[in-house]
Amino acid sequence: MVFSATGRLQAEMDAATSYEEWKAAAIAHDNESGIVKWKKSDESKHFDHASIRRRLRKLRRLTNNGDCVGVLFALNEGIHGNIDGMGHARLHGKAKFGTKKLIVDYVDAVVAGLELIASDCADEIPFDERLDFFRRAQHCNGCSAFMMSGAGTLLFFHVGAVKALWQQGLLPQILSGSSGGALVSTVISTNQDKNLEDFFQPENLVHEIELEQGLLKHLSAFKLEVATTEDVSNVIERLIPDLTFLEAFELTGRRLNVSIAAEEKHQTSRLLNAITTPNVYVREAVMASTAIPGFFPPVTLAAKNDKGKRQPYLPSRKWVDGSLSDDLPAKRLARLYGVNHFIVSQVNPHVFPFLTNTEGEKKSVMSTMRLATEATAREWINASASMLEKPLSMNPIVNRLTNLGLGIINQDYIGDINIIPEKAFLNPLKWLSHRPIEEVVDLIEMGERATWPKIEQIRIQTKISRVLGRILGDIDRDFQRLAGDITRRAG
View 1: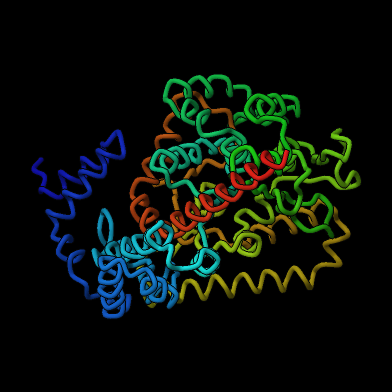
View 2: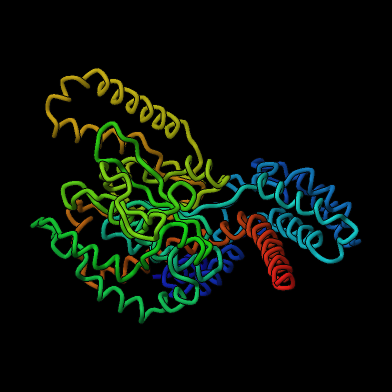
């Protein structure tokens, strides 16, 4: 069989065993296909390239001249990720690697300007004025969050996605997870980077997988038995330190968020984190978020009291799988942290019908009509359930199933950047089944490979927020160091 040059390069991308291999083949593919000409050209109908070009020239001139006051004034005109439309999804889906050079250059120019204002060269600008600017810029620009869906035993796909982002230094500090995603996000958020470096080594991952063979071992494709709480608890206790949400944040600096759903009908779902529930223990939170109804019993949360002792938290309430009501808590993350950019690892099998028209897909008349039909069907289902609420309430089992179904239907399952398996997992009985080590390794590699094409987009779209976070972090550490010095001198 004779392959074209682009076909051969696509095959190299498909066969790559590392991100660097994939990246080299992707760049070569863009050169061979001619897309590199599109990247070098400023013009596009998807963003105001003329405005971005003017901004770029001005920023470069001011920065090269060391005009700190001018750079500050120019950046004060506005810093946000989608300025003049340059975050449009179509700009990041055309090439195999990267996007318009103009966009990359502009982001780099903004970063260079921020670095100049943060440097000693900008001492002519009062420190309070600079600090106020950085805080406002961070607020206006927003930040990114990485959300992991419910997963069952597909959670190892999330492990691969996290590994790929972490190795590139692109894993956001704000993490959320439900069900299997809660387990992965909590492991990442309760272990320091030095431990994660060892954790992600291939031989250590295989070792962890071998130890995990007890998790959900009672579930097979043909015989479903409820796994004991002790089975899951043992895994959680081995992987996750016994910390509260606040203690986990103080240890790693990562903002962990765990979705849980209420067992009772009239209770709302919760998003547990160091802001809303600082004293709640993360282990019980993960136990609750992974408590799939019908397979695991609901869980009562625990918290550290004022004497440092463990006690029940809301003892009259029990909680279950968070993916049933708030798989991806985007609105809550936006409200709590100012998140305006969402990276999603989505493997929840029952939501694949909703994963259409995601980022980068060109809208057509048919796709628009399909979306309208889906929205109309959703409204009819909700209206019908409302009208039948009284008769349904007479049968607790049917009523509970209806509420679960409505919770699933009424959620949004995509973000700005979506990491999704290339193939759907079509056998529903295997979503919770015990998997041999070969399948688990394949899931991790699948998560990595699905993340590689998104890495450069994530790098570009998060670069400004990452630099702002680092600058403000450095300032905060300088304040703490100064306060410590003053305390020591006073002592």
